[in-house]
Length: 260
Ligand SMILES: O=P(O)(O)OC[C@@H](O)[C@@H](O)c1c[nH]c2ccccc12
Image (cartoon, rainbow, N blue to C red; front, side, top):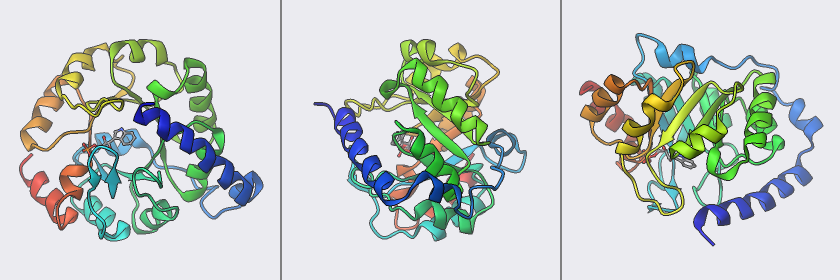
């Protein structure tokens, strides 16, 4: 079984446990449920922002432990202050070291869009994202059918959430594209074997219809790469490890931004 299958299998158990603990009615009563999410587009295209979607990630299946001490409120606040257009917060517990309250902590500390970064396979997770105060959800093409992508996209958009579809190749892009999406992210990392290649972004950018925001995801560690991706037509750049692997991710992003 590859890692993605393992994650999805475990995710089903995690969702069943969460449903047993917190009912949908209770989620709908939570503090953030009625707030209007920020517009992903507005922040990505804002003149005074960088287009960087800065990620808080403690560990990953490919790298193991990345940062075991960073505080989610401190780091996301520093990301915001450095000009990030949005924050990405990993909420998967077992494989990425997420904690259930991470989105709540990031939300309390920031007034820019937050992406709930997880393996979404159930509407319940979309309701959680809304209840916790997230603004954007991720739909990963390789683990969802086109029907699911369309339905989850619609469900999220009806809640006012922004939807980011993640693809890794042309076949996934062509089969998954639908109107209920705001942004399309090209993941430079192959989630089945963890190989990375920035060229994946350059190969796919012109296949993404211009009505969608275009995001390049993963393995970005060089400020010059941002310029090249921008010139190719990307509006957003999802960066995690390059900042999180340092002792001070907030300083790391500041130094990075000074060079773009
Ligand atoms: O840490 P990196 O290489 O900068 O990558 C960030 C982000 O793109 C990556 O964490 C990611 C992209 N798609 C995902 C899907 C699930 C979990 C994680 C991811």
